[in-house]
Image (cartoon, rainbow, N blue to C red):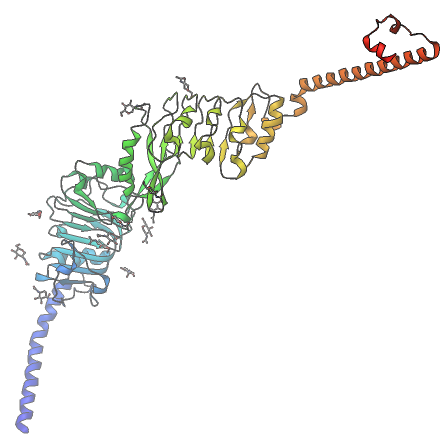
Length: 509
Ligand SMILES: *[C@@H]1O[C@H](CO)[C@@H](O)[C@H](O)[C@H]1NC(C)=O
Ligand SMILES: *[C@@H]1O[C@H](CO)[C@@H](O)[C@H](O)[C@H]1NC(C)=O
Ligand SMILES: *[C@@H]1O[C@H](CO)[C@@H](O)[C@H](O)[C@H]1NC(C)=O
Ligand SMILES: *[C@@H]1O[C@H](CO)[C@@H](O)[C@H](O)[C@H]1NC(C)=O
Ligand SMILES: *[C@@H]1O[C@H](CO)[C@@H](O)[C@H](O)[C@H]1NC(C)=O
Ligand SMILES: *[C@@H]1O[C@H](CO)[C@@H](O)[C@H](O)[C@H]1NC(C)=O
Ligand SMILES: *[C@@H]1O[C@H](CO)[C@@H](O)[C@H](O)[C@H]1NC(C)=O
Ligand SMILES: *[C@@H]1O[C@H](CO)[C@@H](O)[C@H](O)[C@H]1NC(C)=O
Ligand SMILES: *[C@@H]1O[C@H](CO)[C@@H](O)[C@H](O)[C@H]1NC(C)=O
Ligand SMILES: *[C@@H]1O[C@H](CO)[C@@H](O)[C@H](O)[C@H]1NC(C)=O
Ligand SMILES: *[C@@H]1O[C@H](CO)[C@@H](O)[C@H](O)[C@H]1NC(C)=O
Ligand SMILES: *[C@@H]1O[C@H](CO)[C@@H](O)[C@H](O)[C@H]1NC(C)=O
């Protein structure tokens, strides 16, 4: 018993002596690390030995989920040779003071999840050895500097950092020197300029720009058109959108569309060039998709405004539903009736042209189905209302005509005016339709005034009828008087006695 006791004591003492001699050593090392930033926690030294490959997206992008965040410290190292660093919830001070010490030794992968930092200087030498660099799901005030030449970075992930183009380096080519870059994930930010410099170097690159809804489509188009479009591959293609600038088309507005729209646009541009007359350079844009059963149709809007056209364009792209030909010198709408490419047209804007009548539209598919027909500021001086007769039963279609000067007469007051008033819902500008020769507005025509001459003539007719009735009455009374005289006095008064005898007189006698 006693011997055992002494043995245990000896072991305990040995342990105490070991600890006493070794502890300062451990503390020293911790101190060494802490010296540059005494307030900060040291990086955890508890790396879990696990295969790194499962955290390499696309074989290159080191990315860890939040569930793997180190609990005791901001950063942890992991993977073979501790080459990867993973940090969570980092602030500016840590970024500046501690991170450089951690990445100093030959680290090649870095993922910082939720960095709340004022600025990220990518020219800092600590990043120069990284082949995968990721700052994700945080808030970066701005990115400054230029990546060093010959940086080995193959994957850069700056996803979801509340970034705008203004927060990227002001240099025109922020990613220009990243010759080895093959994956760029700038998704879930609010960038407004496409990093075109990436595309112009002749190398394959995968780009994730989903969740940046204000990138102009023009930029994507350029990227897709550059030499070999297969060089650029869009990750999350279906969920990548771009902003279509419509200021020169239908709305002074932007429209957010899937980038697949650009592919459609490319096809559309081909058929847009077929529009006759040739070389008028109309613009054609996809209006929207129409789904009927299994068939998806791209409805098209065509803009041929301000092109000095003298006639309506023909050979419009298939499924053209909108056409703007305003500000031209078109005189006739004949093509709408004769060209089958107008069959799907629902909205027509022919304002500011020289059209004199809408008769040619009678019975066309356009008249039967139009939603908007804007023919204001033309040379219509008469509206053939019967052409549009049955279209305004529903409130759907809109017809606009202001800026034409109508030849106003009694007929206008009696037909066009009531027609305008009756269909006011379909003719929003009905109140402003004016007459030629300063005769005022059509809706203000006063029948009794414009119908002056015809009224006089009708009065005259009544005088004639009155006169005729009077003559008839006189005639009848004369005949009656003659008869009475003949019966009582036995002779016929003048002029009856001077009249020759007629065959019927014999009969009477
Ligand atoms: C970049 O980070 C985001 C956000 O954490 C992630 O969804 C995405 O998969 C990462 N991209 C790559 C290529 O690793
Ligand atoms: C990783 O680092 C830890 C301590 O920081 C060390 O104990 C371990 O041996 C390192 N692993 C490799 C493979 O270098
Ligand atoms: C991100 O980090 C900041 C501090 O750096 C913290 O306040 C915030 O809660 C973190 N966000 C998440 C989602 O953990
Ligand atoms: C870093 O890598 C170089 C060669 O690539 C090597 O000579 C050096 O010892 C490494 N340093 C550390 C701390 O691993
Ligand atoms: C770029 O990548 C190629 C192979 O992908 C590699 O040979 C080259 O060393 C890399 N360049 C740098 C600067 O790391
Ligand atoms: C995003 O950045 C803007 C400054 O550009 C800032 O005002 C805003 O609070 C940030 N949003 C978030 C969610 O941090
Ligand atoms: C692209 O970015 C989105 C949003 O950050 C992310 O959900 C998606 O996983 C990314 N796709 C790829 C292939 O990296
Ligand atoms: C993104 O940018 C657009 C255009 O600059 C702006 O209108 C929009 O408010 C921004 N959205 C966010 C969430 O910051
Ligand atoms: C995404 O796009 C591909 C073609 O790139 C297509 O085959 C697939 O059906 C699309 N997925 C969705 C959900 O639209
Ligand atoms: C249309 O574009 C072509 C080539 O860009 C140009 O030569 C032609 O003059 C343009 N035509 C009109 C009417 O603008
Ligand atoms: C779909 O298109 C085909 C040929 O283009 C046509 O035969 C078919 O009737 C269409 N189906 C529907 C539901 O419109
Ligand atoms: C076309 O119409 C504009 C006004 O819209 C006019 O200035 C121009 O002289 C016209 N051109 C021809 C060739 O008639």
